[in-house]
Image (cartoon, rainbow, N blue to C red; front, side):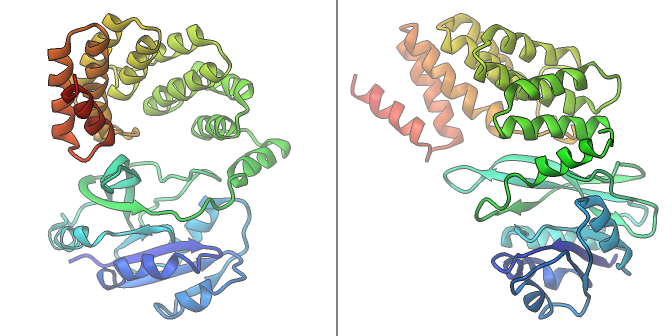
Amino acid sequence: MPTISLCMIVKNEEKHIARCLDSVAELVEEIIIIDTGSDDRTVEIASQYTPNVYSYPWRDDFSDARNYSFSKASMDYCMWMDADDILEETERDGFLQLKQTLPPDTDMVMMKYNTAFDEAGRPSFSYYRERWIRNMAGHCWVGAVHEVIPPKGKMIYTDIGISHRKEGTGDPDRNLRIYRKMIAEGKSLEPRQQYYYGRELYYHKQYEEAVSVFKQFLLAEEGWIENKIEACSVCASCYYHLGQEQDALFMLLRSMSFDLPRAELCCEIGKHFLEHRNYDNAIFWYKVALDLPKREHSGGFVQPDCHDYVPLLQLCVCYDRLGDRQKAIEYNERAGACKPYSQAYLYNKQYFDGL
């Protein structure tokens, strides 16, 4: 059975770190903690779980710190987590079973990363991330922000998930500040970093600059297809905020020049037509979303609700506005089958029952 070194970089995580380590400490053989300048009880708490706690100067570079954490690992695989991540109790048996059955020639294990949750606490937004990485095999983190290990070798995908249960907002300006600093120092952003720079600009409501960055990124030959598709989505949101709705629609449609349609983008296109009272067009795009397969292994962001619950609920709205009450009720019931606890479904049900 392979051994695992849990490698973490932390700073001022006294609120989260015990919860994280409690969830996984018994499942790994080694814990490596790299502290980048805490002035709270983070180091004290971490030291209760492992003697391998190291101080490391923060250089505004997440890859630099993560690579240092991996350099201290001595087990077969390195596993990374952030302090506000946890392995849910329901995932522990699967985690152990995977360790016991992992093919010995595996280079990377791709696990789900759940980062948003619905009313019932079920993941509503997730994507696959490299989670176990073979140690001493030349795998390195790249990217000062939104760091990643480029995939190579034999990869195993598993539905075991790590959940990001962040409490509080942290420093919302940190990533943008790092990008600004890099640009001021004359450093060029490689395509993936350019994409994430555009996202940071969007989060900070700097929509015009974000559009400029995204358009430049989309014109470049380099860059992951999934980043290109997601860039079309975020750029469209920028256009909507700028009141340029036609440009937003064109950008959503442009996503299909890079690959087959994604359900997430089809729902956005459907929403555009729904809000413009073009219900027939909206129905078309929501039905396309329903028919598309989940491309969870593509490396992109997946919103499971966009494959069933969201288009079903919106089809209910469209048919109701067209006066087809029977179809509206049918689609609402199908949405309810996906999420019987949904407030939107229950509201619609009460509405139809009262007619």
